[in-house]
Amino acid sequence: MLNLDASLIYRIPALLFTITVHEYAHGAMSASLGDPTPESDGRLTMNPLAHLDLIGSLMLVLVGFGWAKPVRVDPRYYPNPREGMLKVAFAGPASNLFVAFLAMFLQLFLARYFNAGRGVLLFLNWLMLYNVWFAFFNLIPIPPMDGYKVLQTALPLDKALAYERLVGPYTNLILIILCFTGIVGLVINPLSTLYLQLCRGILALFLF
Image 1: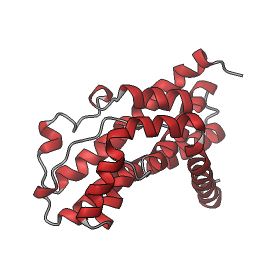
Image 2: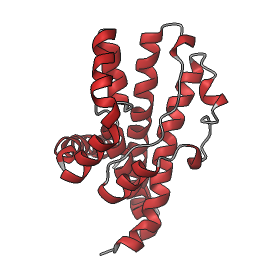
Image 3: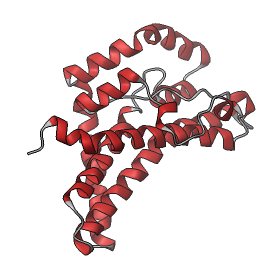
């Protein structure tokens, strides 16, 4: 069984790619809707250093759930701001779910047909897990998470502002408590397991 130091060889690259894909997807979607803000802030890049949040990254390594530095966007540039914010909010989790599916495909394909090495398969496994965890974790409705942005578009403006004032100042504290108490896992783990089972079922049906 791998100890923590050995597993970090595979976990850190997988973590960095997971965060980078997520935030790049937000920025790219916003830019595609006419917003120049992500590019001017240097967030339209696959360089992970542009997207790292120290506390969120440590949480992801230590407990499996975490967050990145949010991409700043300006919905005033969107043809339809409400619809645009929904697209931008979902772009990050959707990109992670796609990468998780792709990582599972590569893991099964390389193991079956190319007898891939243990290191490659372990990296792909962590890539799959981090991406599916990151996708569902970011749908928690706490600012500045993607789930809050979805909730924000569904609530009347006054209710959305009141909710943000209520929980906004305590976001990091709330997230740390949710992670370390295991509360978040009670929701995220079943959703992640269900999604991965669905992916495995699709791959088994069509490819393997």
